[in-house]
Image 1 (cartoon, helix red, strand yellow):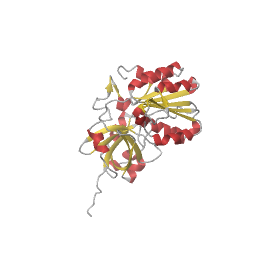
Image 2: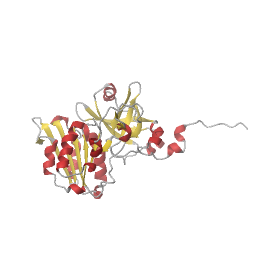
Image 3: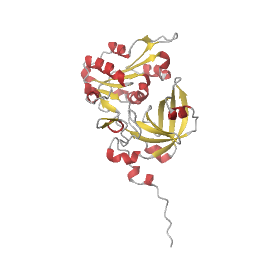
Image 4: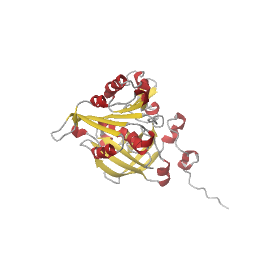
Length: 302
């Protein structure tokens, strides 16, 4: 009797169906897989930023895909290339991710011209994550500047969904101009949650701006926490880290309790192309999340 062989599909192998092993070099072959995904919704945030809601098409792949706050994915636009984008949503929404994308180059411009229903490729997730489990039982300072609120949304959602595990929570956000603020529609929601202190500031305000004027470090003046029981997550342009983290140091918060997400030029996500290396450290594999003590010992990291 002639035997008919089933089509071979490596993505259905038992090993490939196991849960992802985060940030393990030996497991990077898993991340080389591209998930076919669809843009289901697009939200305009500013003139330069849009929020893309993306859904993995295959049911099995959608159930398997997961990530942790602070990780990123490589987004491929067929025919144009791929770019690294931090995941800006809660990991509890299986197979659905949100990506805040600023229009700055060819691929991002193509994405900004895309419509609902467009297909993209997703690889990942890549990189290290914020140690949210280790922060339980402590106060948390969630500090963002400019586009840094995008990667900070994932730990914000995690804290909100697990509010009872943390003490006082501060969300501090600043931009150069008030019209550059992101996710303004969520501020009221975050501010209503018990024991979450939301403060927003801009260096320059429009004529309609009724909020605070100043630098993001000004917001730390009214933060009253026990430094020995406090962790800080800082996201934004690297130049901001020096000023914010120095201010946190002056408050008595140890450097190993501060965590930052480094923005580097990443291309492959797997430490192969060497475009994001800082000496022998590869941001895409060893980062992008580092404690500030490590960052201070990485030459030219910021």
